[in-house]
Length: 163
Ligand code: SME
Image 1 (cartoon, rainbow, N blue to C red):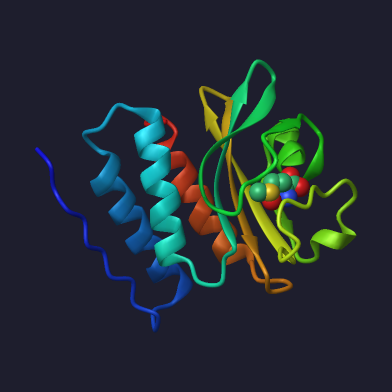
Image 2 (cartoon, rainbow, N blue to C red):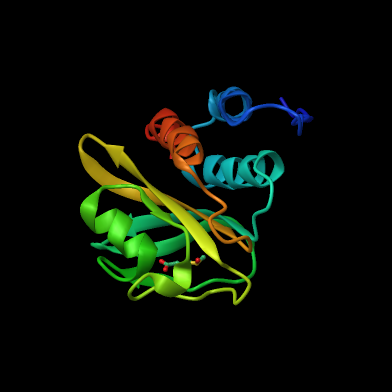
């Protein structure tokens, strides 16, 4: 059945509250939908709606041993990223979140949008293997902190079986 989603993030809430609401909205939107592209598209849109001060939010998927661009909001981006390359490739290769306060200081950072100043990349693991990463970029230096990382990590686990 077609339906409209109308989530209203509250700017006054704490980060844990914000990410709890984002997780609830994500669960509501993806629960009954098996299509990975549809779910990643909606999750990118929800992240964009809930998380302030972003200039890029979306997915890279692991395809044949490398990362390939997935659904996102933002400027057109680099399509393929080798494992170990850039912030996304580092997150995928290590299976670990990358919290980068200053992208210009990160060795090998790939500039898709000159406005990006800081970045958060969280791997999505399924059965112990990285299947995708969630990439958030901000024009504000040091925009992301461990509360953002924890919120996106929880989201990543929640959608691992739905993408
Ligand atoms: N900056 C990323 C590339 C992807 S764009 O930010 C969307 C990186 O270094 O992996």
